[in-house]
Image (cartoon, rainbow over all chains, first blue to last red; front, side, top):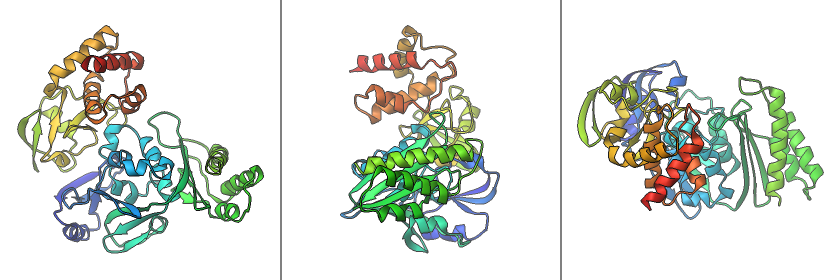
Length: 264
Length: 150
């Protein structure tokens, strides 16, 4: 990425005004994946000084500001004790500590990276995002947004619930991107199944979720059938990491393991 | 753009491009201990400490270091000496390309984790690749160095 100007905003409004001054202006997070882009950016806008660097635990939720680093999220004790630690597990598999000390929550989510190991577990629990202009919305809805309106992600809000969770990232080497990543949760008897890096962006397996949530008893046959529905409804593809067929087989295995784990 | 960075305790002012990486800025200022490896956030040989935390200088824009403290191995020589001796005794020194980044990462780990376990050490150092694959000897040397300091 080529950056012509760099602007450190003092307030969110100032950042928002600057963002909308030029179509190529953008908000910069930790900057980890800048080298992956060949874009020319007129002004990169830095949010370091706008006060978006807190993790706040309330009675019902955990709110994580956009400028918090992934390492800070990973080390957060409240999160580690919730959701079977699937969020911490997801983050700890992302490259090394030195990179996670730079990567921000905002950059990781706003980028909607298909290889994300953060978005998959967040979708598996109850997560909302708060945008400066568009307000609050479910993470799922945010990921589907195709609006051209430029906005700023302020924070994510994770609802505190009793969740049994499973997360697995299949990767070829320790520091690699995921070949596939799978999140499965059970919250108050309701199952969620998320598959990411297919290689497209993480998504719910809605038909499979509907099927399993309508079953009175979760038998091995139900788990087998659910995994089959997951791979039939979601779109898989081939890239340099793995073939479509391999991803399908892996997904079946990890969805089954996840369901067994959360129904123990 | 002018940026003010405290490097190893000394105030420095650099004139940098908005998309210049800290690795390039510091190497241009003769901090050759910071190595260029993969140049894509993967190998960790460019690690420096940003306000005491390990970060990859090939990924950190110099403008983001403005107003912060950077430590390179040049600013950490006395403590690194102890680790270096253990590296020698354990045969962990091979080409030496990753040593300075490893020493800084170990320092960051000690600050962050009290009494790190074997698993903690492995997990913390996963982002520091050794081209000679001397991981076992390095791990022994780090363990012994930590035990010495207890």
